[in-house]
Image (spheres, rainbow, N blue to C red):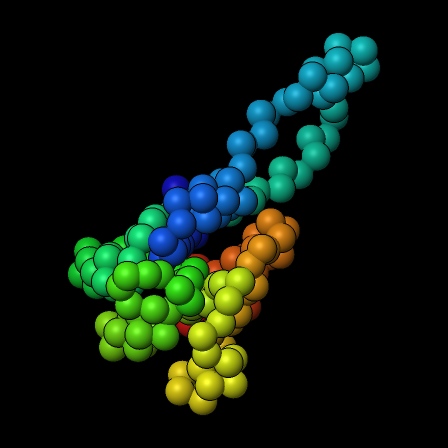
Length: 173
């Protein structure tokens, strides 16, 4: 198995269990069987295909959870120390009673300055302009409004974790 075949690591930092469940369902849908019933029927009627269709391989994701900012930053630190860093973090703006999203992002940047982060919330205690003024790098910081669309989330994750040069390294490295 090549280094590129490893699962891409994503961390969700949100105080809602339901949000963690949603991200897992979006990023790890049930794997399609090698052949579905229609494929089997076609092979029985017409024989096996002479040229197999190329298989589209969706990347696999390892989705970890943290329910407060402090826990999330600790997981990021631990992942870096173990040599298995996260490629992307989804971070909620509001997570009472602990750090809010902005404070978590400040602390996260001290530990992993090049880690890509998507800020998520239905509410915003800070304007996007204020956040960009403080954190300024549009390549590393994105925003996603709740409620979110599953296809939008999946496309965002694929875009932010796939290198543009075809290498195995995440785009920020």
